[in-house]
Image 1: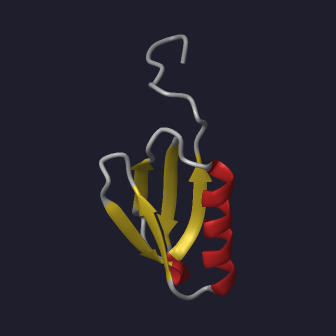
Image 2: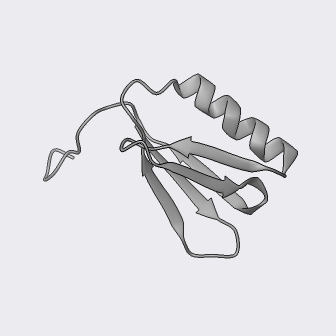
Length: 77
């Protein structure tokens, strides 16, 4: 599953590939809690076990991708 996080006042977008088996509902709950509080840090662990922290006050949008594995290429995408 892919996660994209937009950073406020920046054209940057963090693209994070999450490990297989990531609990979508649990992750969404953590994102909601971080954005509601507006303070603190949203911590996410990527597929390579690297931890990424984003200040909740700097999150402009979050996009959760599908749980499909692999990318489609060509006309069938």
